[in-house]
Image (cartoon, rainbow over all chains, first blue to last red):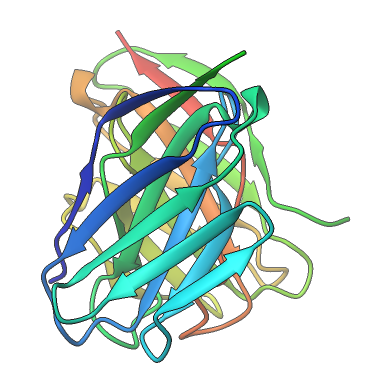
Length: 113
Length: 113
């Protein structure tokens, strides 16, 4: 099955700075890579995802990049705001085409005003 | 009603007891997955139900069982509770097999003492 590793485990930035979180995966056949944001007391919420046929996807201040050769994908948040503070998880399918996801261990992002 | 709702939000049980957690899927979603999230970890897949049948299971013992009902609501049952079962239990619904578009509920925080 798929194995997903996520770094860093914690990330502190000043408001307005950029934040980057990276994940690596083990199965070269994996084809879907979502990112979830989990705020305190809430379930994970999908914020952006990318499929293996593209290298980058943007949605306002967030973007995800995918490097299939190196088997890693990254979340980029620009112009960070205090409300971006949360735990972020990357994920990948347990096996290609199977809708069950395996998650990374999470990154706690703290944005200081 | 939109969104995934879970009940109860918090629960305290004694080791050896049994517990039932409930989930109401998002309207139109016929697939439900349950995840266990230990403190400081990413969600771990327990099992998935599609049209009232279990169609995938993670590395959890048989004392973790589930049901999905015709209205696509579901239950997670855990027998013979152990201290290590203390975690946040998340329900996620999606619109069908192969659909990665999970909507998570806010979870049930289970504490086993």
